[in-house]
Amino acid sequence: MPKYIPSLPFEDCFGSVGEKTYYHRNGVCYYKKRARPVFPGTMLQMEHQTVHLKAIAAWQSLDPSIQKEWNSCAVGVQSHRPPFDGKSGISGYNLFVSAYHGFARLGNEHIPVPAPWENFPVFVVDGVSVVGKEEGVLRLGFHILMPEDVEAGRHWLYTRVQLVKPGGGVRPGLMRNYLATTGCPAGESVVEVDVPDYVGTWDLDLPAYRVHCRYLLIDSRTGYRNTYRVAKYDIVP
Image (cartoon, rainbow, N blue to C red; front, top):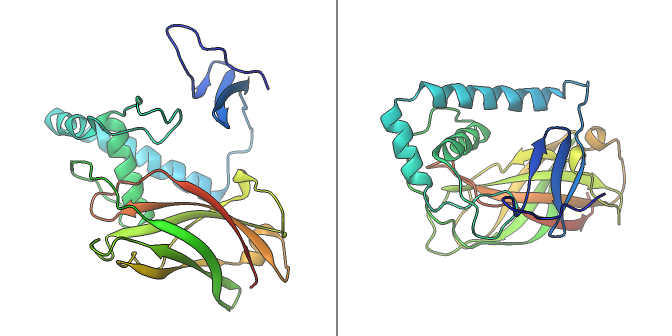
């Protein structure tokens, strides 16, 4: 794919404009012809779009004074989209919509109230294993280390997962979203994530898999999310 050559007034690009889509790979910006699929999307994609449209409508219904509070809360908050250079900020609208989506993913969809951004706790996920399998549901255990002084249960692990054959690569379009069954405790723990119909979802019935995942934390108090991380692990159901 062609590289994007920076020029004033645009040092970098991300997203679609006109007939081109700009994207990043290994820190380099490329562009390609914009896709215009006829397929309307899966049920999950359509549900996500519905939530997004409700978030937009909720923002438009806010009193201008509340929108101004959201703009104040967004000052200094870094964008979760590339380029991750510390220079890209977001608007109050972006922060509001992100919070709305965060609460929806927690099963608590509602109109959020303005809240200042708080840095997320420093945490580590250093492994994934199978902790159970029953009636077609694969229960994955994410071994996670949170600070000892973190508020237990406040932050929830949210992950996108794809199971592939051992050694297989990831296809982001085939990843599926899953929320942990409980909030993260303080200290070292195993946080469980249920993957229903794991065989049918990826049409694979194997004695071993490679699990590709993107994971992040959702703050159950504000609905905010941190930047996702990427990992892969080999598991045996």
